[in-house]
Length: 83
Image (cartoon, rainbow, N blue to C red):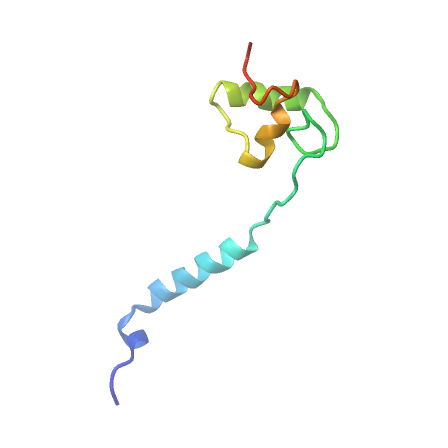
């Protein structure tokens, strides 16, 4: 009987691969996008926490998700900045 591909791969490697796959699929996938301009934390209200997220984004500390960036443009000029 010829050796199969699986008989040459260490069992611990296969177990780790399966564990990683299960963990990736078990992670929550957020598809929510803000519905209000200025609502960067997707809680349906513009609050000081949204301002904190914006400041942290501008400082490069915590980058906003790409989907949320248009909602940071509160004056609708096509960009946002600290000034």
